[in-house]
Image (tube, rainbow, N blue to C red; front, side, top):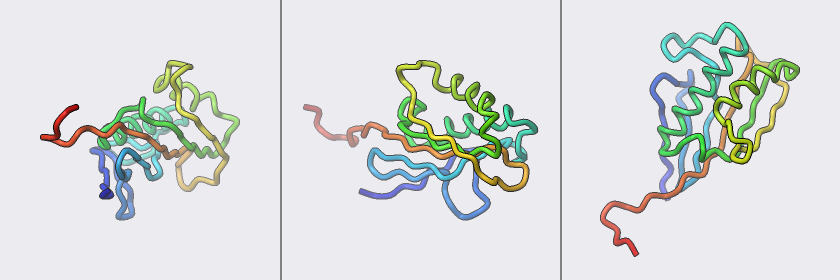
Length: 136
């Protein structure tokens, strides 16, 4: 299997790394922050950063050939875990069905600059049949 770097419009890292990497059906993201796709600036509030972060998550998983439904695990780092209500509001927008949500682990972290939250995810995306393969 070949490793494939995934890039998504409106999201990039300052370092020379992709937004995610896919091998076979596995897609792993790098760290994802709540930045404005047009300016790169962090959202002004935690709620806004969470909204922007989940928008990036959606675009990155789609760029990798999947959807939010393919995410099986998210890890979230927050400057203040006591403010999880803002995270949970964005979480419920992204994953409204209580019977169909990924696992999540949220941890406190000493985030730099204006960053209040960041995450990464793992997705399992069904392999599509190669073009021209016989269907059985």
